[in-house]
Length: 137
Image 1 (cartoon, rainbow, N blue to C red):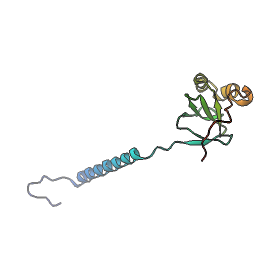
Image 2: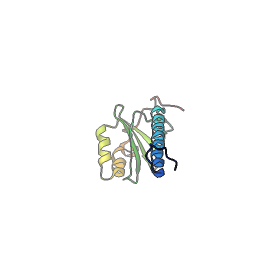
Image 3: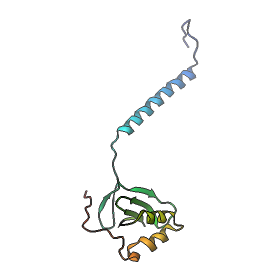
């Protein structure tokens, strides 16, 4: 290793380590800048009634403790509930926040859903109006 008379000796591995740190920090800064400027794209799902629903106003939770429900999305302002049950999304309207909280905290979410919310049990109580404006792709 060549060394100028007044320079202290710096071990090659230490110099390589410092250079790698600089590269990693720069790469991380670039990645964070790209993420910060990336456009936010809202998710859209198609429900069983062939409606495309934009979930940007919904709070969604992936469900892992139920064999019936995979995902629950709720818009408290509109009282709309979107449920992924057995792999298909379905939409329910007029569902109170209390009902959603009871669903999410039920010992058996699938049983609560089937007995309290599902259309064939509630006689259409939570059926959404057909004249409601929906998104089309």
